[in-house]
Image (tube, rainbow, N blue to C red):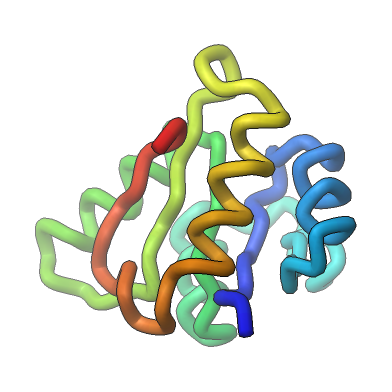
Amino acid sequence: MSIPLYMDENVHGAITNGLRQRGIDVLTVQEDGRSGILDPVVLDRAIALDRLLFSQDDDLLTEANKRLTAGTSFPGVIFARQTKVSIGTCIRDLELISTLGRNGEFKDSVLFLPL
């Protein structure tokens, strides 16, 4: 069983599609009916759904770091800079995290791609 992922609004659709082709459970902010919501609400929604959040948004990374500093728990955030990590690398690394990781393993942490 794979760890489910929640994709921030700015994630390229090819990443989501590539993960789905590999059988990964992925839900996008748009599919969840939450387009345009603020970053704190995106992270709150990932918490409510108990999904790892993948983002390429610097502002969301800032929000995750605020929560780490405040000691506020969340399932985990995976971050990749669009200008530094290819779509293929994101798909590969997210698939590895989702399939080889264990539920709760990434709690209260921020992972950076590439691995």
